[in-house]
Length: 224
Image (spheres, rainbow, N blue to C red):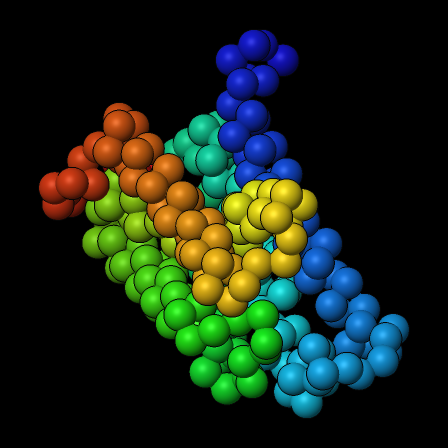
């Protein structure tokens, strides 16, 4: 394997690493729901209505881990069918994660560690994730490949927010202690904002998606 080929795996490797903590936390939650822990005031809402959280965990896990490999150029090339086939898996799982997250934000009881601001942020970014994925699908249906990549990158950035939130919340917990609901809302919001800012940087600077700023229509043969 050449140096260039090795480098193309750095980004997906980093994205997978960023996903590991929330994926592990999700697996622990599924273990609890399977009967591995007692019901408490902190987790009672999950036992009362387990379906949304199960859908959310499974959807987010598949979306974040499989989505990381969409950033490998050789897998995304026109000669590879992997990108399109995996995309047909990613979009439903991503939508499932986002919509179930919206359901939980609306219908689950608000835990003591959260406040209305964080609930609003979940609704805003969850809705933005749904919108991004839908617009990504619409764009590729119109053969607007660069626009498709830009919207899908935004959707993935939001979906990966839980990974970045570990990096924004954990240092505060270690240095200062348990954050107040207001501080926690700010730290959680920062995770989504950081991810979207990084995504927008690459969308605006990468030659691959530069034309997403203007509508383009490509022939069917040009995207194969």
